Image 1 (cartoon, rainbow, N blue to C red):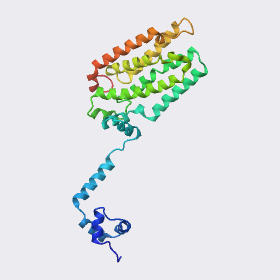
Image 2: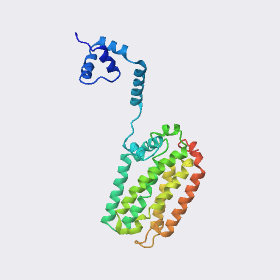
Image 3: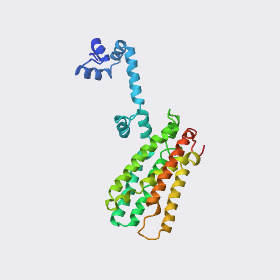
Image 4: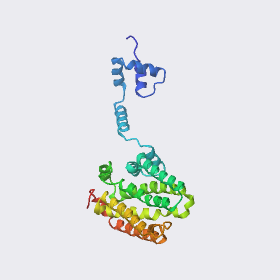
Length: 278
C-alpha cells in the first residue's frame, strides 16, 4: 500500500473536522491500514476519546422510552413516574385490547336487543373491569416489574395510587366510550360508575390484609353474588336491579367513601406489603 492518510488529515479526523470526500477515503483506508490507525491513536486526545466512549456506553445502556412513556414525558410527567406507568402490565395493548373487545361485544348485544336484560349485563360487567385492572397492576404475583418497583425510591402507597389512577383513567375512559354507544338508555347507562369506584376502592382497602389477588377476587365475587341475589328478589322483569336504583347508587357512593378513608388510614402498610398479607 503506497498511499496513507496524512497526519494533518488524521488529526482533523480525530477531532471530527474532516470533510467528505476525504473523510470517506480515510474511513475506508483506516479499516485496512494498521500504520495509519497507530498514527491516529497518537494524534487523538485521550481525554476526548474516553469521554466519547463513556457517552457511547451511556447511550447503549440507557433504556429507550417507548411511545407511551415518551408521550407521558412530553405532557409533563416526571421521568421516573412515566417509567413506572409504562411498566404497568394492564396499560399495554393486550389488556386494553381485551377490555375493548369485551365492551364492544356487550354494546353490540345491548344495541341489538335494547331491553333491560342486556343493559343489566353491561352495568354488571363494567364495574368489574377497573377492579380487575387495578388488581393486575400491582403485586408480586401479577406484576413482572414488581421487584423494580419495590426498590424504586417511591412510597409504596404512592406507587399504588399512581398506577391506580392510570388504570382508572384508561378503564373508566373505555367504559365511558361504551356508554356513549348506548344513547337509547340515557342516564341509566351511567349506573356502573359509582359501583365501579366502590368495588375498586374496596379491593384496594382490603389488599394489605388479603393480598392483591384474593382481595379483588373476593370483592368481585361479592359483586356477582349481590347481583344474583338482587335478580332473584326482583319483582318484575323490567325493574332495574337494586344496585342500579337511586338507593343502590347512594349505597355505592357511601361504600366508596368509606373504602377511600380506610385506604388512607392503611397507606403506610403498603410499604410492608409482601404479596400476601402484612
